[in-house]
Image (tube, rainbow, N blue to C red):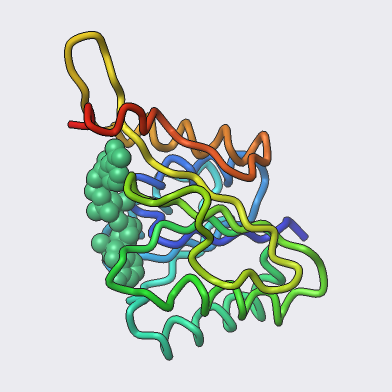
Length: 182
Ligand SMILES: NC(=O)c1ccc[n+]([C@@H]2O[C@H](COP(=O)([O-])OP(=O)(O)OC[C@H]3O[C@@H](n4cnc5c(N)ncnc54)[C@H](OP(=O)(O)O)[C@@H]3O)[C@@H](O)[C@H]2O)c1
């Protein structure tokens, strides 16, 4: 059976990451709310049978938990999760991490994608046993004369690199000097 990965918030800037994971031979479960955006990821995958779309609002803790449990029963333990979760769902990451650790007999990797104001030194939740927590902070691009936020392509490329290198902490783009951000 192919290893199972979960991408939370995978239909926007993480879409390319989902497609890459399918290319790498994973079974990919992808969470978002909008069915059309989920269908679009499935349509673009090189093997649509390797991608399972899950429409759920992660702010609804009960539904989110139920979907995570169900997808593991259907497709096996999750070995890798990539999560981009907005701040209006303060408990979603912890719920996910605790549930995956409880259901998995082996260590699993959690790549937590965070906005520019996150501090790499701060882990935003108690990390449960068997969870190998990794942080990716999205910075900005600085040139001689200006600065700008990252494109979706740059974000996806940075995340894929972090997964390939299994980086514990990384910044895509830069956070320095902070006063030069866009
Ligand atoms: N430092 C930087 O340069 C930086 C940092 C962050 C973002 N950005 C840019 O800003 C753009 C917009 O950011 P964005 O956060 O809207 O990112 P996005 O990745 O385009 O969309 C958010 C993802 O999360 C899902 N989602 C959102 N709320 C959800 C919920 N309550 N429950 C379940 N899934 C949910 C969305 O699907 P649904 O909408 O279908 O739910 C989608 O898959 C990005 O495309 C990126 O280019 C840049």
